[in-house]
Length: 153
Image (cartoon, rainbow, N blue to C red; front, side, top):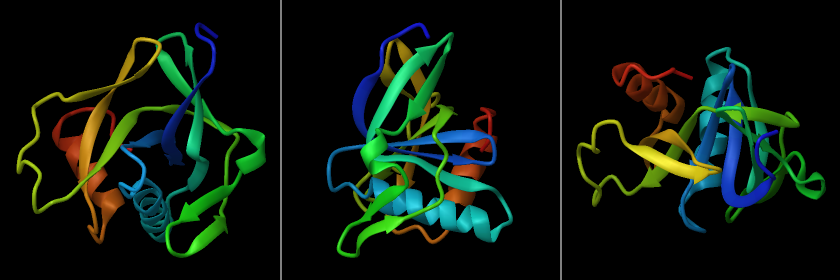
């Protein structure tokens, strides 16, 4: 590893072979969007699992960002107003894209081209702004990533 682990406030999932890091302030909807994304991906026949919710340990591995979960919360996802759910999990995964929940009614219609999110250890991930309440979050992410010609989930 090139960098020591840092604990960040985020939710990390893996869909297929792509790591999605949901970022934003507390209460922004990261966990709910991550859960919806995993559920939609599974319904489409894709593999999807949680890496970590709320607390994500990240470290640099070469030019990549590795996410893993602190053992006490492994497999647990907070569904605000619903409780803590146990979900399928993987112990770690490389992260490829940062996802930021946004209010579709008040956010910019078109984000800046090539937008990046600086995570840690000098690594920035392509950023996708995901409207809250979108019925197909995984399909939205996949379409945006394909349109921007970045590695699609």
